[in-house]
Length: 441
Image 1 (cartoon, rainbow, N blue to C red):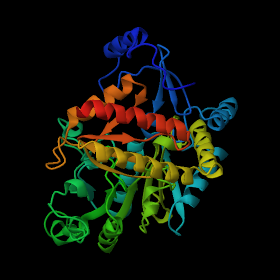
Image 2 (image 1 turned 120 degrees about the horizontal axis):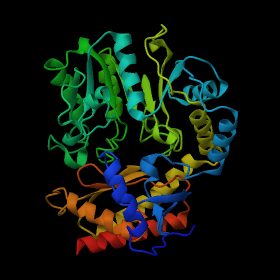
Image 3 (image 1 turned 180 degrees about the vertical axis):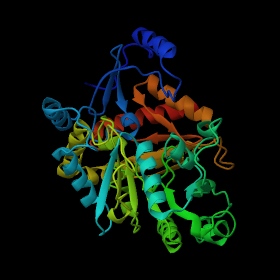
């Protein structure tokens, strides 16, 4: 499919019919664009009216190896022909074990690992919560403002991304304490890196652990190596290592949520590999299954529950999802997509920085590999967030054949497939700049 090719102003008549039915029958969730998908291949999406678009979303960082990647599709077909389900928590099959072996071997750190499989990122984080509490016997968790760890009641307690996600759901799981993340563009302490000496990390020990986080009660610190829903916020060098030291010096576990940043998105399998930190637990989901629901909690083997019945599920380790996960890992390695993400990410960053010189509304470009974003502002001096302006750009780009997603208070995230053709990515960036230019007038 060629893209973009807008035949009918979207949403077209066929799309509008689906939108109306969706509004009648589907629960209110997080709809971001009036795109009604008919099919998708690689980095191109076709809607039900025959329009085609360049995809800079990957279904929210899920299809990192491209939509309907033939190797993933073949693996799914082969597994479906064999069997589709047999409760891998209660019985045994090789495809689940092989994926667990691969993930455990690839996770950072020399200590032996084990894996618990689930169906989503929030479930992977729920398993991490239970591992930490069961192992430590401690009640508290440290998490970060603007962080996102899911929407079920345990992981939601750790989420500090937007008030709307938490409103009217209290009481949630008790014991979660939030502190500011290293959000240098909007430092809540009004300091500047590196002269701040990582104050936002140091204050955890200097203040919070002396007031509201008794160190002896802390089970684990949950963090995203790069914040996702919070705005693709990249902490400065040394921050992750400092958080690791504070956590482990105080007898707690370090949990890296890689649900959005993992699986090669940043140029490494795990974003935390850009640092020297070694988490005790890593959570994955999204792109692990390339569209087939799967979550994984990779943990130090010493943390295992050790007794049957403590934690389990029905669909975790689904054989079709595991077959897809193995295929994704093969593609990432065999097609050198880690290096490609780094190369394309550097090119995207250059293009975005060139745009920033021309448009004051682009407050900051940030990211690693192909996990990138622009935060939009009303002006460069005050840096006031510009959510309406951001939303205008997203809609305008959609009308002209580029699919985008917002993040944080006023950012747009750019998460194309790691194997997007160079020319197609440049086409998407051209559309983006045109939409920014129109919005900036």
